[in-house]
Length: 422
Ligand SMILES: Cc1ncc(COP(=O)(O)O)c(C=O)c1O
Image (cartoon, rainbow, N blue to C red; front, top):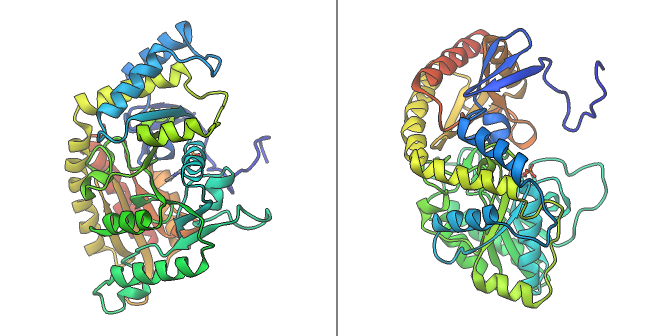
C-alpha cells in the first residue's frame, strides 16, 4: 500500500483527488471528472458553492463550536427554517452530524416513547455503521463482528424488478407486504418500538416504494403502537423532485431523519419530531448528549442550504432535470442489452445491469468494468456493491447543467458499448 489509511470499505479508487468545483472533481494532473454521485450522495449544491464557502468562513472565524449545553442563534434559525419547510407536526429538531447518529437518536426516541425495543427495517436497508443503525442495516456489513442489537426484524423490500411476488409481471406488493407483516408479528415479543425505512432505498439499489406503500406502512406501524421513522438521508432537500420524498405519498412520519443532503456535503444531520414526542422524551430523562450536537457552524450551513434549496427551486429543478436524465437512460436501455432496468425519480436514479434480460442474472463484474471505464473517460458513475451489486446510482448535484448531463451520458454510452459484450 502506498499510504497508511485504513481500508474501511474495500479498495480505494486508484486516482487521488486534488480539488473539487461545481459538478467536477479534479485529479493532480488537472483532469476534470464529472461527479455524478455528489460526493457520497450528499453535495446537492455542487462543490465549493460560494454562499456555503462564505458561511463556513464566517462561522469558523466567529462562532464555530460550543459546549453542548449552549444553543446559539444559528441553531435556533436553522431549526425554525427547517421546520417551516415541513408539516406542522414536525416541529422539534435535534441537530447532529451524521446519518447513523441521527438514526441512533430516532431509535432511542422511539424506544423511550413506546417503552418497546423491537425495530422493523427493510431487508435491503442502509441506516449507518453505528450500533443501532447497523443492526437495522441489511444491505451489507453484517458479518464478522459478532452479534448486533437484538429485536430487529425485517420486512421484504418491495423490489418490483426482483420480487418473487412479481413472477407474472403484475407485481402484487400488497401480498408481499401482508406476508412480511405476518412473519414479523409471529417473531415479535410484543414490545415493538419503531419501523425505520428509506422512502427510496439507495444502497439497496435505488428501489422506490410503490405508491400507497408508505400509507399502508404507517397504518401497520400505528396499529402496533410503534413510531414511523423515515430516513431521508439521500432523498431529502429536493433530491427526488419534492423537498422530501414523503410528500409524494402524503404520509408524515413520526420522526424524520435528514443527513447527507442537509449539509450539502458537510457533516450535518437532524432528527425531527413532534412537540409531543420531544416532551415525552424530555420528561423521561432522554439523553443524547454528543460533542457536536447543536454546533453553530454546521447549523449555519444547514440554514443556508434550506435557503438556497427554496430560493433556487432546486426540487423542481431536480424533477425537470431528472426527467431529462431518465429519458436519456431509457434511450441507453434501448441500445444496450446489458441494461435490465432504469428506475428512481428526480435526480436519484438507478440503472441495473444484467448479463441476461430474461433471467435477470446480475452483472456485478461488468458493472465494475463500466464504472472503471467511465472514470477513465471523465465521469464518476458509481456502481453499487453488496445488495446493489450491478446497480449504478446516478445522483449528480441538483445544480448540474444539461450540458454536464449530456457529457456524462455520452461517457456512460461509450463505456457500456466498450464493456458490454456479454
Ligand atoms: C439512507 C441512509 N441512512 C443513513 C446513512 C448513514 O449515514 P452516515 O454515513 O452519515 O452515518 C446512509 C449512508 O449512506 C444512508 O444512505
